Amino acid sequence: MTKSLLLLITLLPNIVFATDLVVTDRLDLTNHWVGYTALALFVIAYILVMVEEFTHFRKSKPVILVAGLIWGLIGWVYASNGLPHAAEIALRHNILEYAELFLFLLVAMTYIEAMRERLIFEALKVWLINKGYTFRQLFWITGFLAFFISPVADNLTTALIMGAVVMAVGVGNPRFVSIAFINIVVAANAGGAFSPFGDITTLMVWQKGILEFNEFFSLFIPSLINFVVPASIMHFAIKDETAGAKLKHIDIKHGGLFIVALFMLTIVTAVSFHSFLHLPPAMGMMTGLSYLMIAAFFIRKAEKHIQEDGFDVFRKVAGAEWDTLLFFFGVIASVGGLGFMGYLALTSEAMYASLGPTYANILIGLLSSVVDNIPVMFAVLTMSPEMSNAQWLLVTLTAGVGGSLLSVGSAAGVALMGQSKGVYTFASHLKWMPVIALGYIASVAVHMWLTDIPFV
Image (tube, rainbow, N blue to C red; front, top):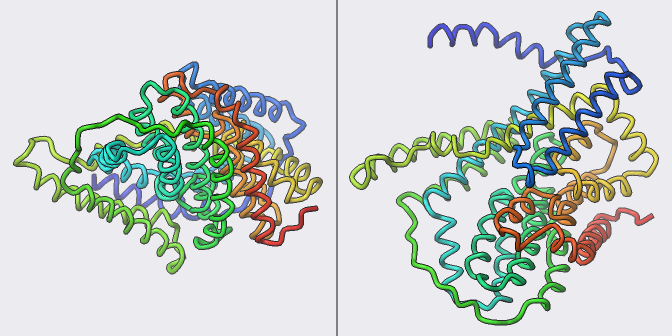
């Protein structure tokens, strides 16, 4: 242990200095066979990601392999041209960006896993079902809950919780389940768009320092419109019948509500570190993880008389969505490699210089319905086009809500397709795409009107 610590202290100055270096010698590989090969590899990997639902081949596997191959090709070309350290410095920069995102998300996922184990979400589900609401009421309640929970929890977790409620109460009513699932996907994605914590894309923009924490909340009204417009139309497709399901009451486990309070305190800590101390939000989140670790010690101690195997915080860390976390690494490294080759500069020129920021940002949203919004947003951040804050808010909005246009456009949609066991499908979502598109257009128009972005 002591030797490892001494080795880390010895290497630390080199790591710090390496990240401060700037790559000045770059090779344009956009017309090189290495560049074409890298593009082809990335496309193949992403096709495998998109068909994960059918192949059950985890999405992290192909993108991590391709990331290694892309950077291996880059390293070989640069070493052959007498630039052995240029690629190394660029890759270190990508790894640093990933490390901040990884630590932030790991803490958030650990808290969500802890709250799930303490039965916080299960108790909410049972309470909603036992209230005896009608199907229309549940349609709106689950939608609004998804909209307001996703800014704090991620849209995937939110969708799964609300989806469990809909599945339990909608037994024997597949039409209600299908439409309610579409509503949850739209609401969860819309709710995540107006909070730095609500979506990976908003988190990336905030951590990059482009927008301040409070600036994201100006997207609240456009996000709400994005959810309410299609929901108001889908409302009439649901029969106003009473849902008859009843479930046994569930008690929240010891310390559950305290963990919720600690999660709120952790968010406050992360925001304070970034806003007042000018430190990375990830450091505030890691400080917040210590709150949970200390609380877990006392919860475990209090439960010893109930069960031998009590609350273990490290099991909650293990329960985080590791496939998703590793997928982010593969995406950031792959897109970073393509950017280092020069492809993102070409894309930026084609989109932002030719079309202008407004049309380019709207197009980004449409693209995110087919390709996951994470690589799309990382590409935009890497291109770093010259835009006003209003335009950065626009691309944050469109990348977040654009994924609702298709069921495969967001993690929430993909997860609910699996949860519904064939009731909610790509085709059933596609049927309502024109209605969802109305919400997309309305939200973009309202944001442009509120921020005085010209419509031409």
